[in-house]
Length: 348
Figure: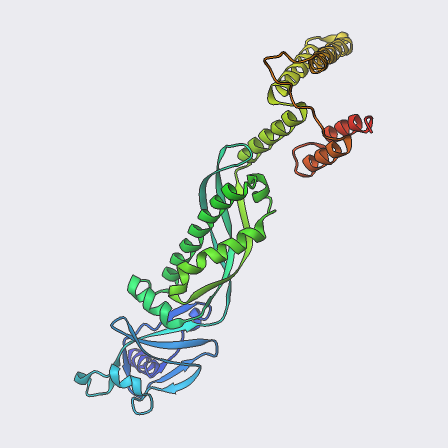
């Protein structure tokens, strides 16, 4: 059995090609450095074979079957070792795929990103996949050999880190410059814009390695569920305060509703309905008193030392449009939207 294994191993050394288990890899390094004269080299249609010595590409061969003979392939003469009697090439052989490789998955934390709408710092994650293509195999191999990353796994690990770094920087920059609400970003509203920015941003980092990111796929920025709930709550409060004329007025209104709900829940037994009605009635009465006071303050002439507050010049139709946008954004619930819409319809 040992003899047959030896013969089989010797036969394999006379033929060089990409290993079957490495057919899907972008870069494959042949494990042997000592290559015999007249060895048969097979290069697939979508790849190129590079011969590297001392960190320098000495030559390359395209698709097809080649007999490694320095008489027919001149650059091989630079790889011959004299102590072997001119029968052995000393070289590293790299097979580099030149087709587009889709579905390369990546993901990781972006870190805390400040939401422009609420001012909160929220921890964000990103995941998805991208497609990659080698445009200049020589640059890739020389660059990777110089970094000591000759294997496909090492190469992909390095490349994913470059993509993630650019995504992190670009998203943080876009949120600041364009003031995109983080909830809109996580909903996918700006996926195309982010993809364009990321592809443009990663280009200078990988051009020197002869690489290009063709496109992103299944790209998604995410945050924790509890952080999403917090952002929605803050966004809802901010929207209501704008509609109420300011945060203080909104907070007073919320306090009144809370008082009415507390009184509604204070009774027991058969008096629940009556107490509920009393509580809601008192709450509504308090709310009405608050509104009357606000109207009186608006109608009374302002003191000489103070400037009159700006009047709300929005038409009912414009306000209807605004609350519809709040509904579409998830800030208002369906019930809240219907109630507010009914109020505004009376003003038309």
